[in-house]
Image (cartoon, rainbow, N blue to C red; front, side, top):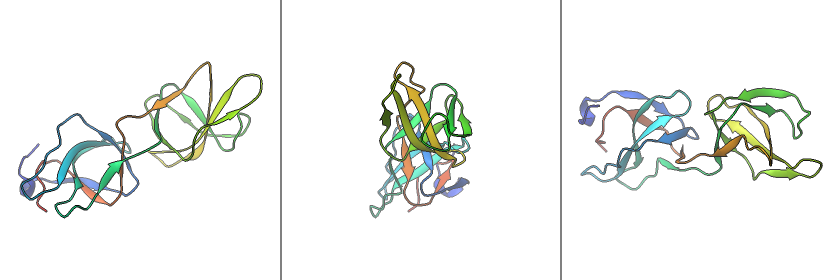
Length: 159
């Protein structure tokens, strides 16, 4: 990567609400103020530096809640119930955002239902897991873009 912001190229614009995976690089605080972190966009896997906080205190990216990663192939159902139609199958490593807390359904085997939206293509539905076998795990670290901002290949921000 190029360390000079003026000579870098924008990888692409990150949309508000888009999910990002925080990379292990240390945060950078330019002399002008603010903060930049290195992320991978979940939608397309592209990596770059994003201004998380501007020099005037504007927050562009914040930590997200209720994001999960699929650990084994899991169907996404259209409705609440294992019998409802399948709209998509989540693959291992695919991320999704839960809309609400998991729901447990009483019966023979304890089942947990999570209402979700996939972060790659926006498919909405329900994922069903049993207490004996958990097909999803909480996604950490997780961030959501709160204001559209560029994803760049370089480090310092010229704000």
